[in-house]
Amino acid sequence: MKPKGLMVGVAVVTPGLMLGLVVSLLLLLGGSKSAVADCGPGVTLSISEDIKVDGYSPDQLTNAAAIMNAGKALNLSAKGQMISVMVALGESGLHVLDHGDGPAPDSRGLFQQRDNGAWGSYADRMDPTTSATNFIKALQAVEGWELLEPTIAGTKVQRNADPYHYQKYWPEAVKLVQALSDGKFSLEGSGCAIPGQSGAGDDYPWKDSPTWLQVGAGSAAASPLGMFYRECVDFALWRVNQQMGSTGAPFKFLNGTFRPDGQGLGSALTWKAGWDAKGWPTGSVPRIGAVVWYAPGVGGADPAFGHVAVVKEVKDNGTYVEEGYNGNPPPDDHNYYTRTVSSNVPSAFLYLPIQEEKK
Image 1: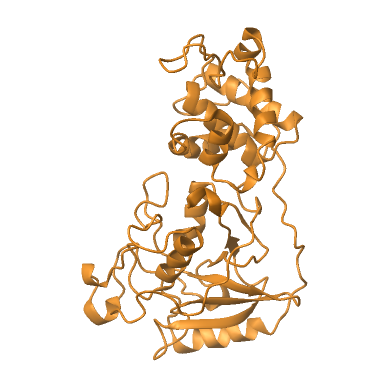
Image 2: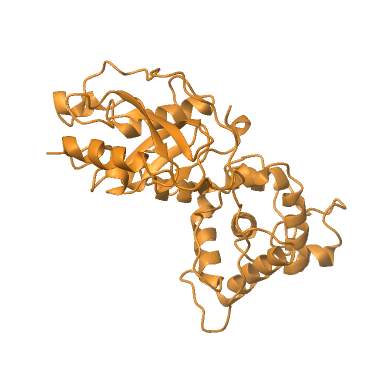
């Protein structure tokens, strides 16, 4: 019986499931998808007196709508609209403030823009649409901003002393933009990805460590990343750390600290939600170094937990090579594997943000 924690990411239930279903799927080569992922269009407002969002006043919703409209006018993506709302939440709580703070007493407005000539007149900084337009233009001028974590992208514009100041406002910004938009959308397909790094084969540091099956679901089976040794999730999180420049303790990305909302990254089941909560891009095109996410039951993955792996190589015929752990049936479970997979089999590819921000 599997332990009832969030640290398990088992990929196989029965010997025939992965080998039977997945191998047959691998032979069905779907049409290759565009190599250029779409960062997603912006969303159009649908705000009225009837729209209410818990915890927010009509004035705050009106200000959020002004930010979104300014973004739409500048062809800003939905992710950009959410970043803009996130920054305004972190700077003013979506209030048009007529005062600054100790370090910046001349700051004003939704974005607390300073009186330094870069943000227009006092009237400009106090006007929600004009101040948002000026913020968004500055955001769009940041090279590669779509690939950054939202809080890093916002900091590139605001130059906040703490680059992670805005991180805790991201879930609320997503909620607000979704509530005020004219249709349902998600971060799926935000898709902007950077070239990753191919792993050096089975370089997983804990390949000889005991699995939870061998020692039980106690702390002895947990790796320094907070996942069980030799599970698919532990290998994938190791590869994420490695690509982002964190190759030894203390590791930067852990199961318990990955998400800004305080929830664990968890089993493979919740990894897509973890990427969305963090504001990292996802999409349907394989990229070297991206995490491969299988929803439960997809491609022969575990029907309860799903499966994660990592893209090792992308081929020209609509397939890619994935690498991972615990992707084969016993007796070869909890070991390293590689296999060629049709690009249309996984549920999503989970991309990494720009690596230089994490070194």
